[in-house]
Amino acid sequence: MKTKETRITKGHIASVTAAVAALLPEIRSLIESARHRAITAANLSMVSLYWNIGRIINTEVQKAPGRADYGSQIVERLAAKLNQDYGRGFSAPNLWDMKRFHAAFQILQPVAGESAILSPPAGESALTPTTRTQAIASDDSLLVDFSKHFHLGWSHYRILLGIPDPRQRRFYFDQACAQRWSKRELHRQIAGALFERVALSGNTRALVALERKKGPPEISDYRDAFKDPYLLDFLGLTGAYSEKDLEAAIISNLQQFLTELGSDFCFIRRQYPMRIDDEDYSLDLLFYHRSLCCLVAVDLKIGPFIAADKGQMDLYLSWLKRHEWRARENEPVGLILCTSKKRQHVELLLAHGPHKMLVSEYLTKLPDKKVLEERLKLYGRLLAEGEI
Image 1 (tube, rainbow, N blue to C red):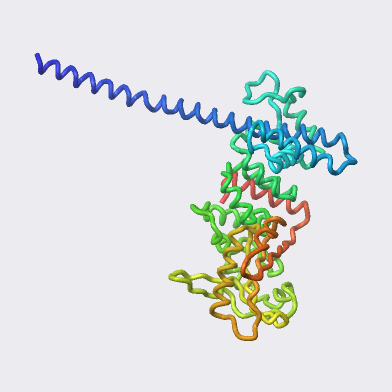
Image 2: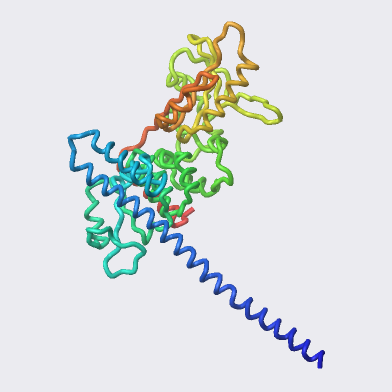
């Protein structure tokens, strides 16, 4: 009898185990789906909230177009009240971002009667996609359709707001939507100057193939810049090119490169080696300036100037002062050449420090508007269709 009861118990346990194993996948799928919908709904609610706050601020500011300080006063006082009631998320800088967000983007509101995550703001009627598209066709505003762009969060839009050129902003917005870029990937592509490389490349297919081979790095840091092509169009580089191609082009066109830098620059070496502890570093370019009587360390960046660039240059200059600084010379100077720079970043980072350092932008010559638009469209189509 005892043996029979044991068999029944074991069989019962086996049956329950099998049933649980069969039910788990479906239940897990339901849980993950519900969590995803909840996160998406919260994400889109935040985006819609911030856009509508920007709408309200812009509407109020427009009531006093002749008063330049009116908007500042509104934002500062609103921030003080909202911070007191709701916390630091509604600081003055954040409210300015919301104001800019409304000016740069237009949210496609759900059509009445449709199932949607969000409804139109109070006082606004629901518009059909056609009506909303026609309403914004006359300006540079980007259309946000939550049914297509639900994976873009507020962090994405804040990054996009940092791009001043409307064409660049539209390009990165379209690619972030089409390729479903994460916030980190969007940062990486902007830092890698993808827009400029697509615009300057004469071989879009080769550029697409190069992008696919690279893939996103596991850890994004300053060394990524050395793996991407530098955009100096006067060097005559065309199509998809690498760092080695750039170095060869600089040496081949050294006179023109020196002319671009200015007079009195004397070229010393490229990829100047530095051994620090057990690690090897390479400075992109090392010059000597006759009038300044000092070494000039040049670091090329294909992205915007960031704090890590300043730290890297400090390391180079410290090494040069210890190992290469000679008597009767002035201390070395660092020059960081980048595709773009933000004024406050430069002022704050360079305000204090042990070394003399400058940050300058280098410009690229874009093709005419028609050619540029054709290349950007072709790049997006090739990535979407996989024609490589």
